[in-house]
Length: 242
Image (cartoon, rainbow, N blue to C red; front, side, top):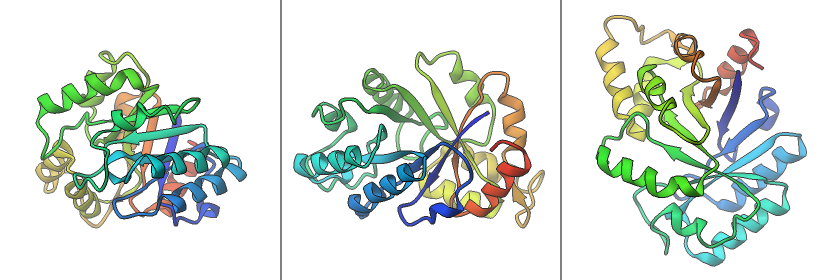
């Protein structure tokens, strides 16, 4: 199994499991300098840091150039380039615009995939966006998923590698909260429809069942810890995934 992990710029890297690829978020209103610094700290520790580049959160080309340059100087070889939130703060409207600047030359590029659908973006719009941005990408990282069907269906259709988003062990009440936050349409529906059947709101849920169902078609998973890094670390070690 191949696992990557997502953290924030203030996460204590001494708490990380021995997973090679560590993604660092840059949320709306966040400081790109902090994300770049965390990437450098990770590189020094032997990790492969993958900072987020949310197009709509970057003010202009000068800031983008500074962010990319800082990351490259600190040892970054890979980046996740995304559109970001709906609140555009600068000149960039889409991830394609920042990729076309040429600043990412020599950097491995990942893009986001909405395999699970979105609460506020139509399926046709998502499909067109993927078609437009895929030529710029080396691979796709999906939003977090709770069902196996979307993974199995999409694997045979994609022409570039994919990493499928899963959550680390956490309570279903927490999963529902984050599903609403990120707008993971099908995962929200799945959780709600199963609350009284298979889930206990007070008992942590881990992704083992999902991994077992899809291991015949993929072994690449991206873990969203959602603040449960300690539990995720323990789970990875107990299952001998890390």
